[in-house]
Image (cartoon, rainbow, N blue to C red; front, side, top):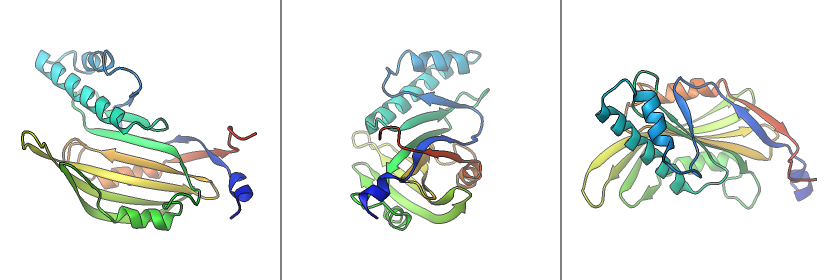
Length: 215
C-alpha cells in the first residue's frame, strides 16, 4: 500500500462500549488530589474513616500507575461499584494506534503473535493463559488473558493481577484500538473477566472518518 492510499483511509474518531456499573474517568494529567479524596468521600461517605482512607489510597495508586504510562493519547478509567467502595478493575484504551508499516505490529496477525510472547519488567512476570481471535461487526480483534505476578523488590511482598489486553482492527481503517482491563488482584472484578470483556466488546461501536489533522 502506498503512502497516499494509506493516508486516505479513515481514522478512529470516537468509540462507545457498554461497561458494567461503577466506572469513573481518571485524568493522569491532573493532580491525584483532590480527585481521589473527593471520589473516596462520594463513594465511601457512609463507611468508616478507615474504608474511606483505604479507597483514597487505592485511587491515588491507580492514578500514579496511569500517569507513569506517560501516554498522551491514552484514556483511563477505574471501576468502583456503587455501594461497594473498593477498586475492582482498571481500564486503559488508546483509540489511535497507527497501522503504518513503520510499526512491527501493523497487522492483526503480527499483533496476535506479539500477544503470545510474555512481557516482563523488574519485579514482575507474566503468565499468558489464553490468546484468542474473533470477529466483531466492525472488524477483527485479538485478545490475551494473562496473570501478572508482582513482587516488591524492597519488601518482598507479592500479589497477582489479572489482565485482558485487546487489539481491535476496524475493517478499512488506518488505526487500531488498544484496550486493557486490569484487576488489582485475581478475581477482584468478579469471576470470568474474559467473558465480561468479550461481552462488552460485542457492544463496541467505532466511528470512522477523515483524519481531522490532514487537510
